[in-house]
Length: 151
Image 1: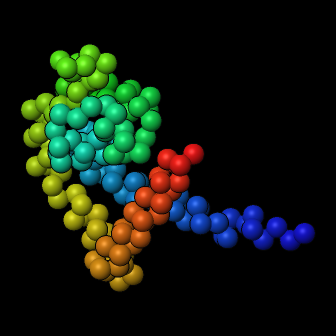
Image 2 (image 1 turned 180 degrees about the vertical axis):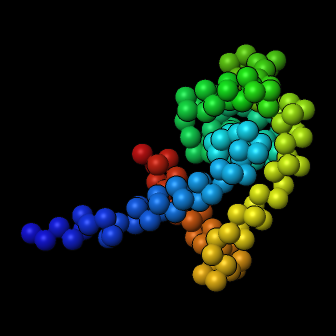
């Protein structure tokens, strides 16, 4: 038997993983200026879009488990970036809101997406190609999430 299917170069998952890892590393200098990690940046992106979400809502948007998001949120609270508060309507729910510091970080982070896009080899990935790739990746994500829901 040949086992060609087991070669690293024949896997779809590896180039996706490698690109994700390399892009995340490129974020680091920008995020270091804000003194946050990439996962914290993702939480901030969610909250800058809509403040006052539950832990479950944030976890859902980031496609993470709540037991992964909760320690991250606790660290962000300790840094003074967010506030965690029990819901008045349902004490089982924790509402996450931006602190003043978290709100101010939005302005400092506003140029990060443009800088990242400009650094992604413009001669290979022009803006239209980046948009097309992002749309295709979201179609894959949605398909996989739909399949998970059916289980």
